Image (tube, rainbow, N blue to C red; front, side, top):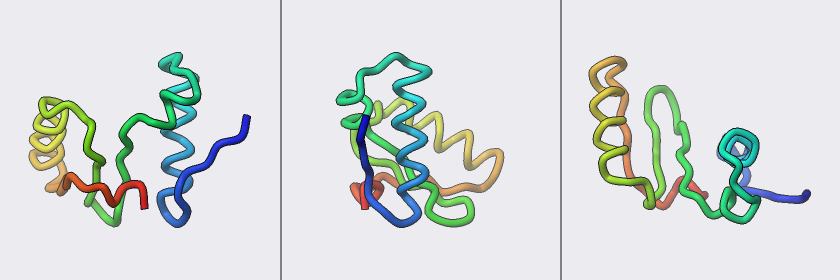
Length: 80
């Protein structure tokens, strides 16, 4: 199987997310590649693509802020 994601710091994160979706969640390669991704930008900042359910983002934001003071931003930049 050949697949790819954007380069830079997103590349290893994107590859891991695609493989987890295939191996752990049984998604086919196309669905796993099309699914929204997140990217750890630096420190405790996380950027997420559009496509995540709003409830998932709200729960994630609350948990990350309460526990770590992390910032979760919604952006199309996660694919860059």
